[in-house]
Length: 131
Image (cartoon, rainbow, N blue to C red; front, side, top):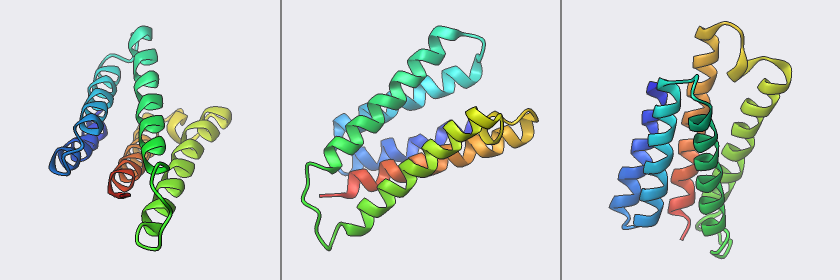
């Protein structure tokens, strides 16, 4: 549950960069993630959290690709694409093989899920800095 708090860095960065919509979407994702991890038995909250993840990813990617791919922002695009790929891999491969974020042992499950949150947060930061 506490790894969801890493999204607070995205909220703070977005506010600092005066990207208020990005801050609101990141805050919504952080709120739904903490709520879901607090009460994992609540199915509507799980769907709300998945919707928030999709909204955050679509918003960040669409804003990033509105900008021209230049030498100055090349690193941010590479980080964005890499972190999205790693996040999708950790989630869906783990779901398919009952490993990583879905590992039966809770300790390892939470470690992988923390990595998922960290990578996705990094991707959100890179999306903000593409200008």
